[in-house]
Length: 139
Image 1 (cartoon, one colour):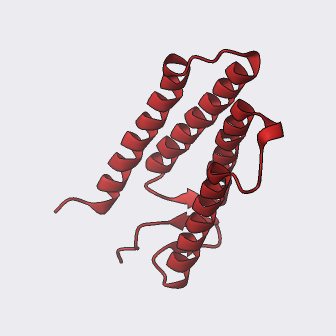
Image 2 (image 1 turned 45 degrees about the vertical axis):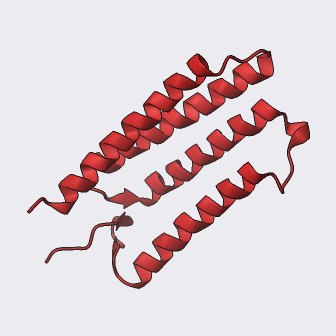
């Protein structure tokens, strides 16, 4: 039987590579016409590269998610959203924008999943190192 950690690591490496491809594809497939849009593509690309890097870090640590890595992932999402709103223009930003609401919903969903998993003991919490593991402990 395949070790769940190996599957988890493989998924994270593939996911990280996909985010890198998205970051590289943005400036190739979206031809920005203004300086503001070029800046936005750059911001979003940096966010996607950082998010891909966070997946590589997560895989390298056997699925252990530290508080710092979790904060880094949330920060990456915020950078990507900043790229989105820089592209459309901050004057056009509305709290009811569907992309903003979708991003906010995703953040709340991730935090909810983490809370539920911690509550039911599916994530091992080691208080001495403040690490979360999405994989159940095999003892």
